[in-house]
Image 1 (cartoon, rainbow, N blue to C red):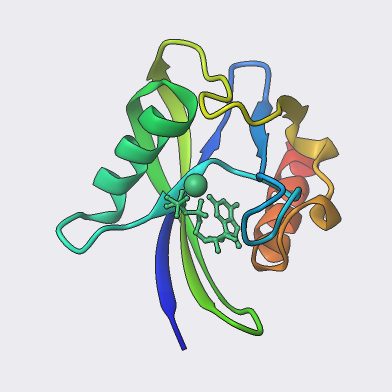
Image 2 (image 1 turned 30 degrees about the vertical axis):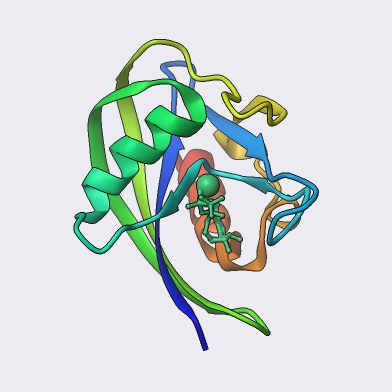
Length: 133
Ligand SMILES: Nc1nc2c([nH]c(=O)n2[C@@H]2O[C@H](COP(=O)(O)OP(=O)(O)OP(=O)(O)O)[C@@H](O)[C@H]2O)c(=O)[nH]1
Ligand SMILES: [Mg+2]
């Protein structure tokens, strides 16, 4: 089975809101909400892929990102390892550069069911940490 390594950015602003994008209707996990990101190429570190993907998908230049968590998931047709980063420094203003709908959501108001199954534990962790503040 194909196994993808994926770099994913949890972009958080100073109001504690997180940037979400909607996956295209024709993609894997169509129409689900996601943290922007994409596949790590063979010649890249996870961090390099993160910077490149956020440039391509949201137009921002990442200046501060730190590793947050890893998630492994087996979809019926595909295995993914997601490398999550918390992104709290960037230049520019993120937007759906590939035309995808976007929204900012308070961290404590994230809803796991809106995300692909591979994200569920991470979303639960983010909500729990927001509630603990
Ligand atoms: N970007 C992103 N991908 C995720 C998340 N959760 C999750 O299961 N994935 C899965 O990770 C895989 C790769 O992500 P992707 O489709 O964004 O990759 P990419 O930007 O390189 O896509 P491309 O092939 O169109 O260039 C997909 O199968 C997608 O369903 C998430 O929160 N963000
Ligand atoms: Mg992507």
